Length: 47
Image (cartoon, rainbow, N blue to C red; front, side):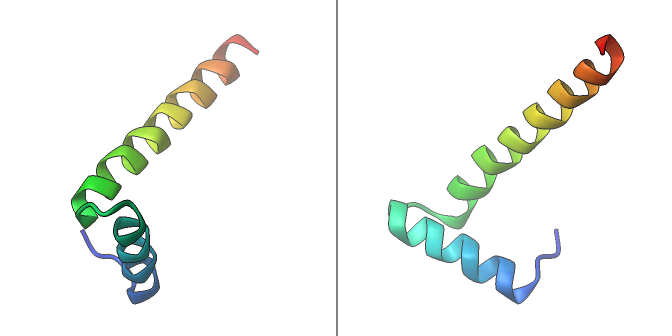
């Protein structure tokens, strides 16, 4: 994946605050975004 320099900086800052790797930050953020996407899609279908 390609990330902008500012996104990498934000990811690195979050990783540093949590004392984990960049990958350990990306995985749950991506999972959360996918969950929100699927919930929104489901809401549109039932709405």
